[in-house]
Image 1 (cartoon, helix red, strand yellow):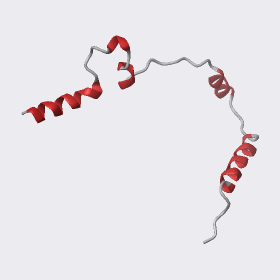
Image 2 (image 1 turned 180 degrees about the horizontal axis):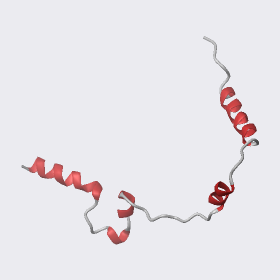
Image 3 (image 1 turned 90 degrees about the vertical axis):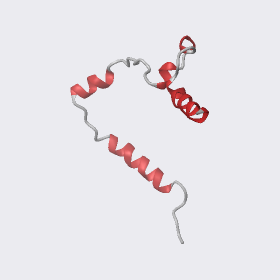
Image 4 (image 1 turned 45 degrees about the vertical axis):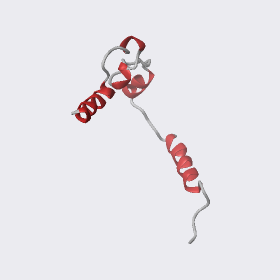
Length: 74
């Protein structure tokens, strides 16, 4: 079995991407969008509950464990 040296196709792919970027043309609207400052969003989901202030609350990731414990104790 013959195979290419490790990383040859990856390197060629990266070079092709860099060379192709020269021909990339953005509209004024696309440029304006990319230049807008980043505005962080509030964390949602499981990670939003992972704060010291919420340590006494029942967490989503423990709900199933509580249910399973109740089933086992029956």
